[in-house]
Image (cartoon, rainbow, N blue to C red; front, side):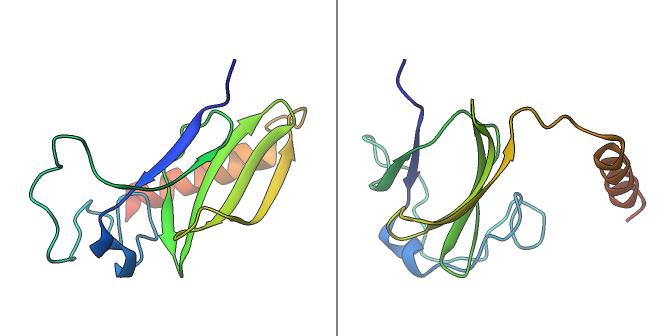
Length: 120
């Protein structure tokens, strides 16, 4: 079985784009203030900037300060990785071991985050 590949496909204009620091964008509304973007993808798809092999994951990417961040998982654990947004090169990564179970503290933090989100 081959490892999944992450493909970051961006138009050249996106190389100098503003940060996308949250899953739904800077204003949490899934809208970009960028101008000059294509109205639709070319028939063959957008140009591929780089690809990178990671493990499976369901996390979106966020981009800030020239870095792309995401989560992925392997048999060794779950990784948070920072990549150079222009080249895909690894800047750093941290791992939570696979055997580490979700403990009560993690569940409590998740509950508080969910409640804060609903009340804002």
